[in-house]
Image (tube, rainbow, N blue to C red; front, side, top):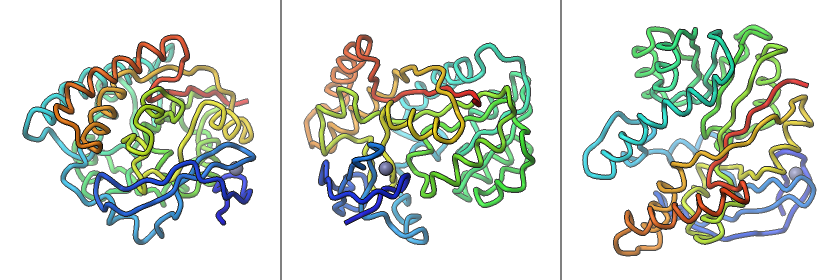
Length: 290
Ligand SMILES: [Zn+2]
C-alpha cells in the first residue's frame, strides 16, 4: 500500500513492474493514483540514497560533448534543441529575469543570457552546478537555497525535464507560484506516458527511467495539479526530438540490433501519430498565474 505524493490517496493500482535498465537493474513499480491520476515510482528511494542512482558516465545531460556516434548526435541535436527551447520559452516576451530550475551545466541559461536575459539557476548536482556557475559567471544555487530568492521576482521560470525527479511536488510548485511575477510565464517540459512510444515500449520505455523519475505525468494530471495551485495551463506543445532519443534508449533496453535505426523509425511514427492526438513523447506545458 502506497500513498500518492500529490493528493495522499492510497493506491494499490500497479500499472507496471519494471527495472532500472539504465543503471542498477533493480525492480520498481509504477502506481497510479485513482484520484488525481498522477503515476509514481514505488518504492521511492530515500533522499540520501537517490544520488547513487545518478552515478553513471552515461548521464549525458550532465556532460559536455562526449565520444562516439550517439554522443556526437546527442550534442548536435542539443544545439538545435537549445534554439528551439529558447524560442518556445521566451515566445512573445522581451528580455527580463529568468530562473531555470535544474539547469544542469547551464547551456540553456547561457543561450538566454546571450539573448539579453538576466539569468539565475538552481541545480542539485555539485559538479554540474560548478560548471554552470563558471560558464554563466554567476552563482548557481542548490535546491535548498530556493527560499532565499525574493517573491514575484521572475518573468520566466523554466523546468526542462526536472519535475519528474522532484520528491516534494507540493513544496516545489508552491515555490514556483511564489517566485513568478503576476504576469510571468512558467514553462515545464516532461515525458508523457500517454504517448505512442510509451505504449509501444511498455515496461522498456526509457522515459520511465525509474527510480530517477519519481513522478510520471500526462496532460490531465498536469492540468489538475497546477490548476489546484493557482496556475492556468495556456499551451501544450510537443518536444519532437525526444521521441527519437527515448525510442533509441528503449530499443537498447529491449536488446534489439540496430537500436539507433529502430529508434529513429519508432520515434518518427510516434511524432506522426502525435500530430493528430497531441500526445508527443515529451510535452512542453506553458502556464500563467490565475
Ligand atoms: Zn493523487
